[in-house]
Amino acid sequence: MPYKFYKLVILGAALLGMSGCGLFGKEPLNIDGERINVIREDTSLAPDYAPGEIKLRLPRPYSNARWSQNGGNAQHLMGHLEADAKLKELWDSSFGSGTSKRDILIASPVISNQVVFTIDAEAVVSAFRLDNGKRIWKKRLKPTNKEEKSSSLKGAGIAVYNQKVYATTGFGDVFCLNMFDGKKLWKTSLEMPIRIAPTVAANRVIVQALDNTLAVLDAQDGKTLWKGQTDYEATTIVGGASPAYNTDMDVIIAAFSNGELRAFKASTGTPLWTDLLVSKKRTNSLAEITAIKANPVIDGDKVFAVGYNSVLAAIDLRTGSRIWEREMGSTSQPWVAGEYIFVLTNDFNLLALNKNNGKIIWNTAIPTGEDLNEKSGVFGNGPVLASNRLIVATSNGYIFAVSPYNGEIISYISASDDIALSPVVADGVAVFTTSDADITAYK
Image 1 (cartoon, rainbow, N blue to C red):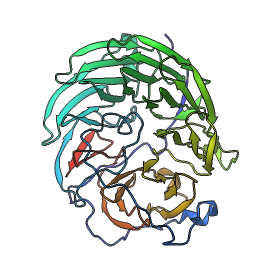
Image 2 (cartoon, one colour; image 1 turned 90 degrees about the horizontal axis):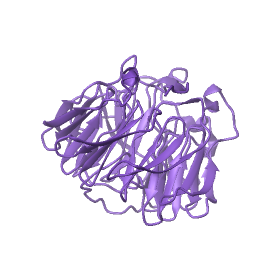
Image 3 (cartoon, rainbow, N blue to C red; image 1 turned 30 degrees about the vertical axis):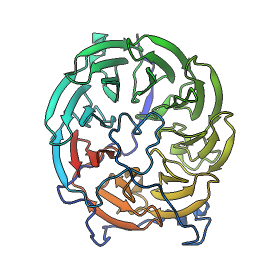
Image 4 (tube, rainbow, N blue to C red; image 1 turned 90 degrees about the vertical axis):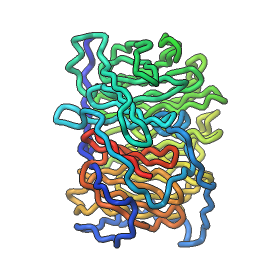
């Protein structure tokens, strides 16, 4: 089937990997270049409280046994994870082909049963031991249509569920593999490129294609249970948001490249409500991009979602009514823990907000080491909350540990390569991914 043409916008496509020093040592903060305080440009992101007026209280850190899919779990709600404050490198391994002139590495690793699973830019799935980084197996995924071997961005994403690995690909196929040896169990074709990792829970595999088709498959045999679709956007961002799924409430929240956030009844595909996360402001050409790349988060009866084009919103899961909204844009998943939500904006503001009313508690400008004219080429990943630290990485080579309580930058390390994706954490181990398809584990 001939594919429709889509213009993919690469926002700072090259990222950075890291040196082997201990993570979060107490170095003084001294980064070359001008530190840009974006609050000077947008006073709407100024804190709503005086410094120290709000005392943040977070849940105790817990040790999670798995990070089974993009965003950690099906709801993208991981809370306060446990990891040693002074992480030391355990191992590093290459898992294949990374970012190149033709391809971009877009798929985060996942962790389950003490195994790290990856998919590279050439759609090669690999399994590594979490304790020492030794490869257990690898499997090259091949397209149903041999003519699509030349497609770019072949590896879209992976998830682990019920001792199976589910993989989506740029050539439009969804694979189910045996977790222990990589043997193919089934394959289903959507006949349209996929750029987003699957979401898997309650025996359903939720997949989103480039043309904004949402497909729900049976996890056992790959048969299509239902499909839904919204209008597609010709100009969009590489990658996208994995759907969020609340199995108890039987609701799927899907974010699309046209800026729509839509709720569906998971068992039937019935549309429930639609919201549009697009600001009415138009400040430059990039403001015309309406895509939602950040994973939406389901927390109880609320949905938290942020679009690239400057809208962060809390929405009632049942009715679709907005509870509150703020003008800010991001391509990174908001991190929800306790009564708070942490967001890294496109302008490198790291914010803590009260999740119930959207009020800003603190706002820290993350240094980029770039002047204002060059800053557009730098982007960030995170945050991830682990052991009373928010971990944030920037594509010009820095990984920061920030206090979730007051926004203070506690420490940082300088990276030597592109950090392609947000870190993933399981069993107290933090795994970072470079654009060259290297993974480094710290504990």
